[in-house]
Length: 455
Ligand SMILES: *Cc1c(COP(=O)(O)O)cnc(C)c1O
Image (cartoon, rainbow, N blue to C red; front, side, top):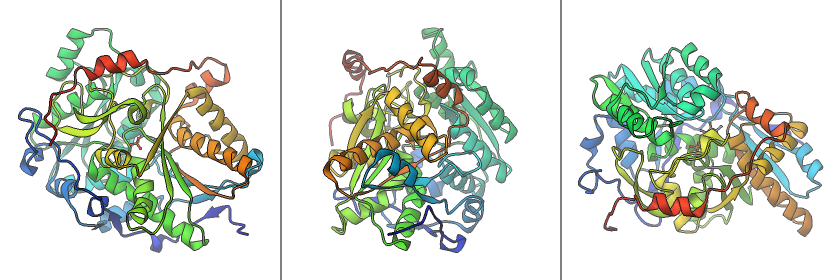
C-alpha cells in the first residue's frame, strides 16, 4: 500500500514537450471557418490576432511540441505541481476508491491558466508585439495574462465582464498590480461595446461580449494582439503539461487512474489533464473513463448541440465546430464565473461526440457541499469551478462504496478559491439558488446559430 500524500516531481523531470492530440484523433479536426464567407479559415487570416507560432500550433498535427526554455524557466516558479492523494477525503466518504488530485492552485495567479498565458506572452513578445488584449470573466484569465505579460515587459488590456468587475474587485486589483489596464465590459472603448450598450443598456455583460471587444481592440491597433485563455487548440496544447506530469507522478507510485474527472468552462484545464490519458485510449493502451463536469446553469456539453457557432456574441470570431448553447446565450450570474462560456474547446467536443469523453452537469449547492467537505478534510479552499470535478469524483467514490470497487479516481483541481469567498459566504448562509438553464431559453438561443452547410 502506498503511503504518499503528496507525489512530487523533480524540477528536472518537468516535461519538456506539450502533447498535441491532433496527431492521434480518429478523424481530422474540423477547421475553423471565416465568419463572413463560412469557408475554412486560412492561417493568414488569423495573423492580425495571433503570432505565427501560435497559429502554427493551432493547426499542427505534430504529436510533440517542444516547450521553449524561456517558458520552462517561468513554469519552474510553481511547476511541476503536486499530485495529492486525498486520504482524509477517502476516509470521510468511507470509500474503497483511491482519490488523487492534481493541484494547480500553486501558481502565482492561483490556477492552471498561466500554463498557457506564459507561453502565449512569450510567442507574442518574440514576434515584437507590445500589447495583448483579452477578456476575463471571473478574473482568473485576466490575472494570469497580466502576470505573464509582466515577465516579458508587455502591456495588457483586459475587458472584464461587468458583473465580475463589480462583484470581484480584488481580481481587478491583482491585474492592476501586475500592470494591466482593466475595463468593465461592455464598454464605450469599442464599436462592439457601444452597440451592445445601446441594445442592452442594463446588461451585466458576458464573456461573449467581452471577447468581441478584446478582438476588435487588437484587430484595430498596430503592435497589439489578442490572447484567449481557453477553447482554442493551442491553449489545450499548453495545458497538457498538467496531464503529462500526472502520468509521470502516477507512474512513480505504480498507479494508473480508472477515471479522470475535471471541470469544463471552455475546456482547457480538462483537456490538459485528460488528453495525455486519452492518448493511451486512442493507442488502445488504456480504457480509462474520462468525465467532464459542468454546471446545470451553463450545460454546454449535456444540453447544447454539436454545430458550428461563433466564439463571441457579435459574430466577429471564426466559427468553431463545438457543442454550443448559442452565441447569444447570456448565462445567469451564477458564482462559478469561469464556467459560463456558451461553447467548449472543439477538440474536446469532438472527443465527446465520438464517445471518448462523458459529460455530467451539477447544481451549484451540491458543488459547494463537495467543496466544503474538501476544505474540511483536505484543507484547501478550492475554486467553485474546480469543485465541479471534485463533485464528479465524490459521486463516483460513493458508487465504489456501494460496489466495493477499489477504483483509482483523480481530478484536475484547477485552482484555489481565495477570491471566491463571497460565493462561499452565500453558500454558508444558505443563499445560493440552484438554477437549471431552461430548455426553452436554450432552444431560443439556438435559433440564432449561423446556417452552415455541414462539411
Ligand atoms: C478559468 C477556470 C476554469 C475554467 O476554464 P477551462 O478552460 O474550462 O479550464 C476552471 N477552473 C479555474 C480555477 C479557472 O480559473
